[in-house]
Image 1 (cartoon, rainbow, N blue to C red):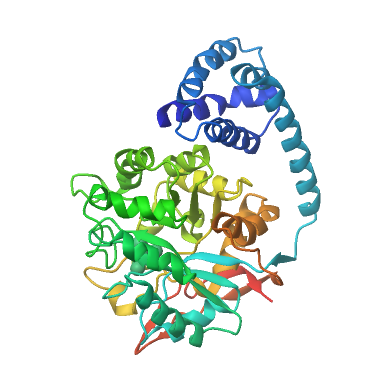
Image 2 (cartoon, rainbow, N blue to C red):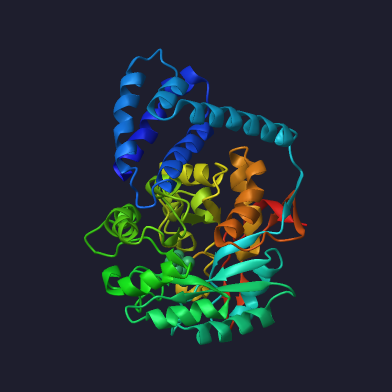
Length: 445
Ligand code: DOR
Ligand code: ZN
């Protein structure tokens, strides 16, 4: 299924045909998303696999006569009225959006946003970082990879109370629990009952910071995952395989193939967020998956490619996991974030570490970005003229995915350069923030 869709995307993406049909890449992304989702939704068990799989053949026949327009090729491959109407609709939306951003924006007001992936660390440090987030965001989804991990509803309640005390008034911490080989279906029921746990974080054992308690094989937690699915909780996934034999830059793509697709085959209704996606493979997979699959996207993965890790020397403050990838992947992830698709939403993965733990012979993975989160996304979105897509990405899509109301109130950004401090206090140490000592063109008002 995945390979087929990938092929379709690639084929329709050829510049020649794009020009022939006078449509832009964003239209293609939207069409690409719509076709499989509609077909799969009609067949919850992926029963439409055959229908989709047979489409490229017809499409390629149509497309090989280069005079046939993109529109006709797509319409011929699928259902003509459905797709032509949709394309017309995308064109209208696109031209309206362009009008609103055509005058160079100096300020930007958005519905209050949410950060759907955040690390705030333990009691000794969290009061130094939580306020950066709660100054801008109404809610954040808190990651559970403390030592020891946040495993049960009771652990989460205690942790959540600490975060609430450190935060601005009105801020809501939504919690994740750490999935281990020993998490039981009864614990999942208790998590659901407490009301503030949104799901379980799947760390493949050994994949990243504090993942040693993680899952050694998803098949071992099949009944627990079944319960997570039944109760409508979400599995937040760190999507990387961990075998030493797999190149670190290929671990996300391998995870989709080896772990995620089989997992979704066995639990098709499971709600999954692929956290911090970094590759074209992940962006395409999520875009083409059913509506129960979403993804968060970090600022670093839309602003930088892997060259940043080595610019003029080894740069530990650009090291995070999944690691930054090649430029083509950065572009694909930014295209997903700015595509207007509801499946992609803001999750900073702001992950502070003491300065000494980063600037070390074996430095920790994690980038602290909470001090400048929204300005960083604005910088990335502006780079592709897509500031009009920032509000949905930052403030609507995540809330809609998690089934919580969109926030009331707004935040405003101004296009005004500021210089990021070289460090901030962090417990009894300091943390070096993303863009330390550098200028950012946007700031919160
Ligand atoms: O870079 C990362 N840092 N990736 C993760 O998955 C974990 C995080 C952390 O906790 O430091
Ligand atoms: Zn994380």
